[in-house]
Length: 184
Image (tube, rainbow, N blue to C red):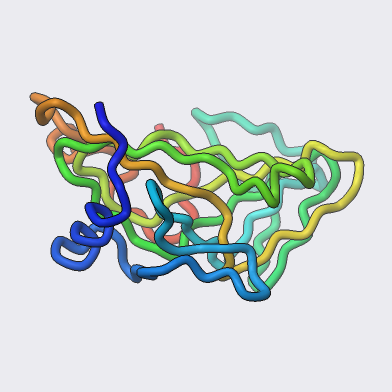
């Protein structure tokens, strides 16, 4: 299962719409870098944030998820409370080819500040904006920046296409836009 290089990512993004909007070269002047890299694509955090809080004593239950457990904020930055986390989504919309699996890793700039990015793999033929969890593992508030790099996606090409893709299963997070909350 080879990892795909920049020229393959560029071709798939420009000819097949795999990433929209697509930034063809890495941007880094005065920002946390984003755009095409040697073997991946650094996506940007959107300016919509769902910050988890315990103001209403909500219980986080993936089978009965309540929006009482967070507050929604929009803006160019977001403060993640100590030992807490926030949900956001990518600026980019992804369309994953049938023979590709995509994994995500956090940016080192944020990791070095105690911020951990979590994203489940993007399965073959999944499409949408990616919901991203950012955990603040420190005892201090931490700032994240909208419209700047938050994570890197790596594209792994399988030896062949799977018998059943995410689209074939009519996956529950297909074509999501914005932050997608847990669904059963």
